[in-house]
Length: 302
Image (cartoon, rainbow, N blue to C red; front, side, top):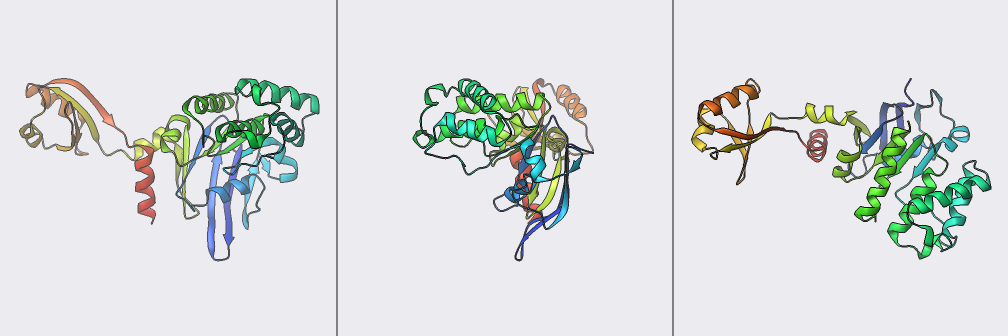
C-alpha cells in the first residue's frame, strides 16, 4: 500500500459536489503538484487529508493504516493558503507554541525554532510581533511552523505567495531537502512554472473529479503533438516545408516550430533536410508545458 492513499472520497455541500469519487495513491519521497481551476475541489481534498473535514464517504489510508486525525495529525505539516498565525505573539513564542502542539518539548521546540529562524534569515525578527512582519516574512514563519516537527507528510497550499525570488528559492531548497529525506510533499498552486520546476508527479482535479495523474515527464510525453524546434543554415524555405509535407506552427527569426505527421519519424525529416542541402544547427522535440496540458484537459472536461 502507498504511503498515502485516498479511495473514492466524496464531499458534497448541499447539491454541490466538491470532491466526487476521488482516488489516488502517493508514495513517500515524492513531490506531488495538486492542480485545478478555482473551485475544483483542491482545498476540500486537502482538508480531508489533514482531518479538518470528514468525507461523506470513502477511505483515507496514511502510513499503511486507516487515517485517524487524533493519532495521525502530529505526523502532518499543513500550510494553508490563508495564514493562521497569531499577530500579537512574537515570532519565537509562536513557533515554540505551535511546535509544542505537535508534540515537541519546550526545549526541543525552542532549539528547532531558533535553528530554522536563522536558516530562513529571520533572526532579527525573533522577538517581534507577527503582525509587524511583511507578507513575505510572515510566509516564512508559517513555513517554519509547518515543518518544525519534521512531519513525514507536508502539505503546502500556495507556499510562495508574497515571496521575492531569493526567499522563494530558500523555500524550494527546503522542499527538495524534505523530499530527499523521504517525506511526501503535496504542493498546491496556480503557478504552473513552479510545478514544472518542483514537482515530479502531478494530479489534475476539476469539478471534484480526477482528470489525470502520474509522473510529470510521462504526462508531458502523453500530450506531445510531434512538434520540433528546428534551426537550419540557410533559413528554412516555405517551398521546402511544402515539399516535405511539413507544417510550420511558429516561424521565428532564427528557428521554426514544425509539425511532423505521426506516421513519419524525425530521422526521416532530418535526412530529407540534409539531402536538400541544409545544415542542421538545432533539432529538438517540443513538449507541451503543464499550463497547456492544464488548459487542454480542463476544456475537454467542461
